Length: 188
Image 1 (spheres, rainbow, N blue to C red):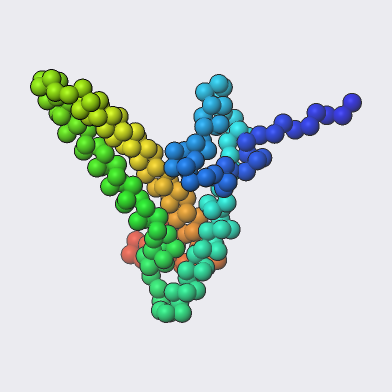
Image 2 (image 1 turned 90 degrees about the vertical axis):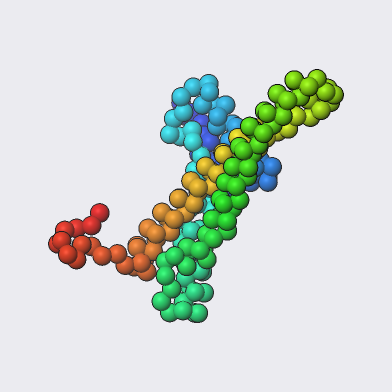
């Protein structure tokens, strides 16, 4: 009798981010199958996805070296800061925009709540009250989504920075001192 074929796990099918649409990425719809599976039973290691292709070391290494070679053409001694900005600057900008949207939607809640209480006291038009309630719900939804997007983008940036720095050290492009010059002890 032959052994049963291995069961197909989420890790075997790759990461859904690689094929997700813009809407799926914005609303985190690609994450729902994993959340559904985790709600039914505790997740095991083979249940989680592989890294998306853009967060794999080979992809990040290529980004770093493209940025590094183009910057070295202009300046033979580029700083790590400018290499980071050239490689991942769009992500920094995106994080600032998402954080601003999150703060703006968060600041709307007290204003809308106050307006709803004023409407309740005045007894004005019902449509006005419904519009205020809809705006409050929409503000909350935008707030929740912006918070999730901000967390996801900062986490991905952290992965990219860590993998990129590790690749630079591995390739001896980024040289770090092994000892503290004044104290004669190894750095960690």
